[in-house]
Image (cartoon, rainbow, N blue to C red):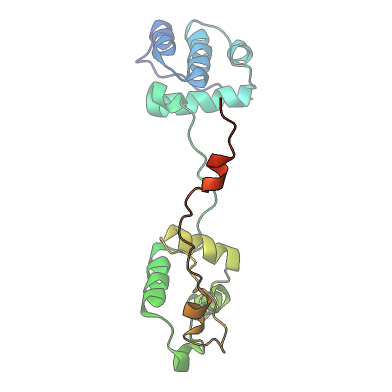
Length: 183
């Protein structure tokens, strides 16, 4: 078994306890208190018991604490998967969408997601799913818009003829007033 990593010497157990009292992050406070126990001469097993974790996690805390101080013990967001498309590829995709397809060159009169997937494959040799392209386009600020459908044989004046005029507001019936019982 390797020797345990040494904690940095510019902090004391009291400093870590003070930081733990001042923080609003419960996980950071728990980690600081566990490392404070190590500063006071406790074993790493005691620190793991205080923190409710295993020895490897305590070692990870020590590495992060030595590198960044108490701020290194704050929960970080997971980096997530690496993006499939680089920023230059995204810019090229945006330029192609803005310029629109050229029917003679691209073979389409409007861009569909499958057409863009084919263009990305031909341009960058990058296989991207339709769902990924949709996500990338939404990230670039594009939204799917479609025109309202029209029947090919629709007459131009048929819409105006179909619209109905609203009836005028009716006046209250006099008969109703007359039929009320008197008091």
